[in-house]
Length: 212
Image (cartoon, rainbow, N blue to C red; front, top):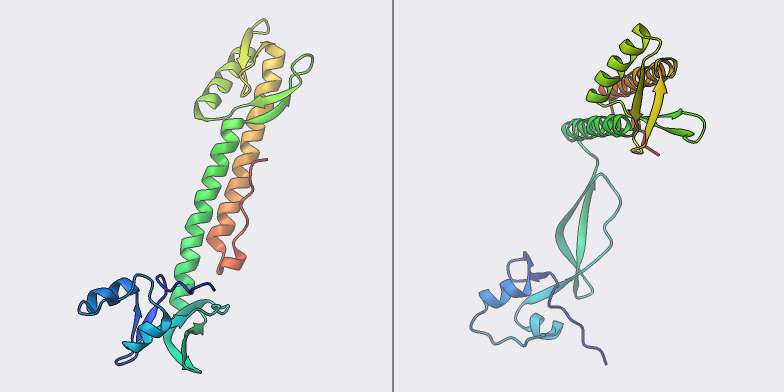
C-alpha cells in the first residue's frame, strides 16, 4: 500500500482559516509537537491542519487562487476568474509592443548579418552579400571605384567566407543588388514598426518574420 506524500502540499489551519501554509511553516509554528517525518492527513487534521487538494485552474484572463472551500470534509483549491481591466489591457499592450519592437530589431540585425542571396554564377552560385553598417560603406566604396574605372577589379568576401574575384561590371551589378535589397529591408522593417505603433490591441500587433 502506497502512503500519500503530503510534504509539499498546501495546508489550511481551520481554527482561523490561515492559508496557504507549508509543512515547514507548520513545523516551525508547532515546535512543541513532534510531527512524523512523513505525516499523514489524519495526523495533520488531528492538530487542525487540512491539506488543500489541488484542482485544475480554470481558463481566463486573471485567475487567482482564493480561500479554499470545504467539501465533504476536504478543502479544495478554489479560483476566482475575471477579465483584464482597462489598465491591465493597456499595460499588456505596451509590454508586447516593446517585445515586438525588439523582435523587429533582432530580425533586421540577422538579415544584415547574413545578407542577401546573390547569384555569382559559375563555381560560386548563390551566396550571401552582407549589409551591416561597415559592409554598406565598403559596398559604396567599391561601387564608386568600379563606376569611375572600367578596369577596376577587387576580391569580394561574402557571408560564407568565400572570396570572389570581381571586375568593375560585376561589382556594379553586385552592389546595386545589395543596396536595393537593403532598401527593401528598411521598407519592410519600417512598415512592421508602423503597424506595431498603430495597434490598439495585442490581437492587432503584426507578427515579426523569422529568418529562414
